[in-house]
Length: 273
Image (tube, rainbow, N blue to C red; front, side, top):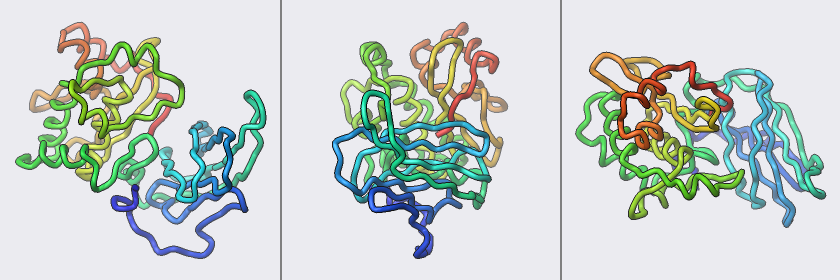
């Protein structure tokens, strides 16, 4: 599903590491991602755990299937551990396959320009088409970011979904933008904007962490004009305020919400996707 938008690299015989049950395709590590597959049929729950050079542990669910799923390498150059684990009972998991890879990114933005499990799209995605429509008359990257941002903040916040969402939830961006009315939670808002900007070749990080004491998702954006836009939401022609489409949408643009968002001390990063 993701192949059409993935950078293409020459395949080497040793680019797929694994055993008879699971594999890690490292062909594209310089582009900031691996493709992990559990080839053997199983009804057991599967996990992928990636430990970064900074010792951050990223844990994902994995569906069995020969094509596998794409997972990002978001914390720069260095040694990453990638493991596939199979549930044996309760919360117990056994190692199915584990390997270490030495990553040298072609540039620091590479992981934030491609699809992955949480930022899932391809060339036929409705979200990609909508992004192209939104930015078609925009001249600069900042104009494109503003157009996408204005669109995303009009999505309604889904309080019922927020109250019932389960661990392991993965946004379906095409389903959200096709719905009427359009409704979502913080992860959805951030994923939609990330997909739209990446599809326009604008690096975008989907960030998960805490806003105050609330577990939350937001975005960082990179443009040639500004560098990384972090801790900002509103552009007045010179500066931005925190790029958090969820709070700007639910807060109705109120000054108190903007003050909270604009204060970077209220946010703490846990993961980059």
